[in-house]
Image (tube, rainbow, N blue to C red; front, side, top):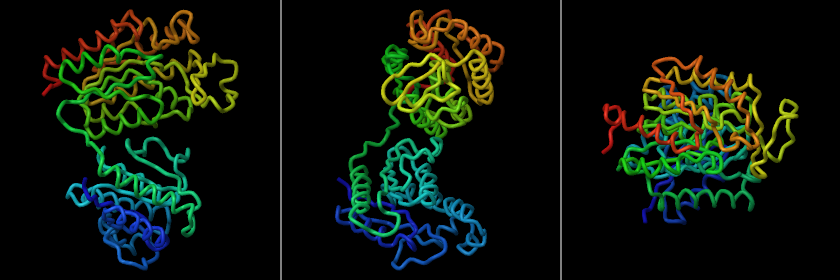
Length: 411
């Protein structure tokens, strides 16, 4: 058991009572609080370890310089730069073990940036008046960010908001004491998939990859899963990516809320990480099962997976457009890319007799992929379904060749 140091981030001029209450909660649990003031206009009524002037200096500015920007959005963005730089340095120097931030939309905006500079395994807790709100874009969410709604806490302490604040402090301390941080014992391969009822290749791939000396992390592509993989790829935490479920790309292209952000399918390429890619589930659009179907999706084949998520089938022209988008994203890659096109189908539901069987639509997608995938990205057309063992074996053969060629290394 360690006695962690928790970095507490907030505007100490306007949230003094809340921050001091959190400091007391943390100390009552045998931990230490280090307070970072990210206020701009006012001065705190108590001592802080990291002042707003230190934050401004880390952003290569001064507090007055930030005020002189004359715009609250610009001021908070500049303050976030300094907060990120200081937080990164504090962690790298071993001075903090976790972070907790509180705020409304302004504080939340800053906190999302700060959480993203800390590695996976460093506890990150956000107490926010907009926790879990659709205002929070997936591309700004750290993979292991924890959030709690700051209920009833917009102005001043009360028994309701004390409950949220104390739970958040306990979560940060408990996580810091209990966390098993990622180890670098084996290179990690990231695989994207949906639930095993839709895409099944990982059942065969995982044990085979482990036999080869890799650790396997499988990401559920329902928005935040793909976002987590993109974040880890951007940090070069993955040795190879098997990106076989691209439904988040089609979702974003078609305005679905089940999105991993506009840059989905780009981070691994930008980092030069070898990629094997296939279009699992990509001809579907995910919807909120509990919401009314919009006019643009009326009359389409509809499938409710559960009470949270449902999907509809894309039109042939939409499938063509998504194929072009995928090809454009992959063309930017700085590392090797192989694209496997399973001509027999790309999810369990598009098999003959399935709710989304659409051979003409699949053919249209495959044709557009063939027309747009260009070297150095290599297209491999496979006369098989994505859930056939042959597909997994093809992916493994590509991986084995990369290992033989020295593109991938196993410890």
